[in-house]
Length: 49
Image: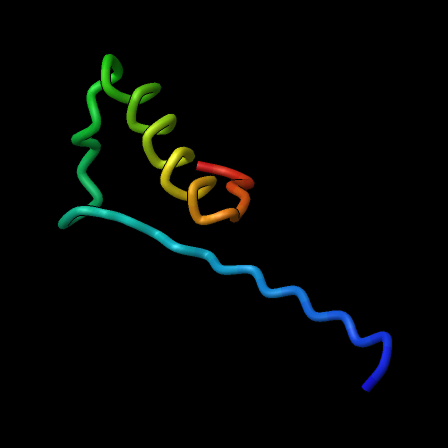
């Protein structure tokens, strides 16, 4: 089919048992940068963390 457009969004959720908040504030920014770096390295986009 000519002029066909496809767009797929994935929603991935990481959590620990009972959803405890185990990420310390001092690690949070570095962790977000690390996750974004991995995703960007796969030529994908991060919309929210």
